[in-house]
Length: 82
Figure 1 (cartoon, rainbow, N blue to C red):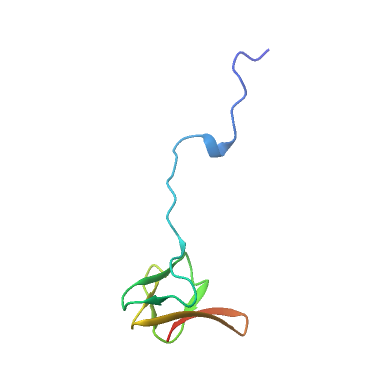
Figure 2 (cartoon, rainbow, N blue to C red):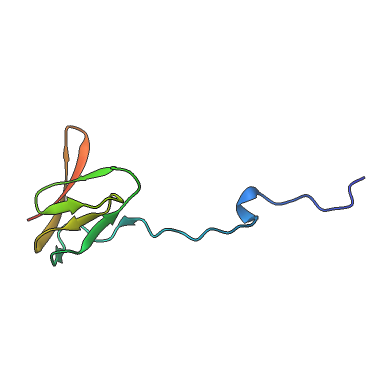
């Protein structure tokens, strides 16, 4: 007979890792200044379009001031600043 209660799921065990705050930071139609982060991502899920650049950690940022727009071309998502 077991003398210890059954362990919980793996998610509740140590070490507890904090979230990395990934995702879309600015919505479509919002205006942003140059240099602002638009999306933080792992891998190239969304590609940069006009007025947007990509960092070495795949962060997409605005290269000029304007409004953010999301489009899909040939099944690939793009984000632009117009």
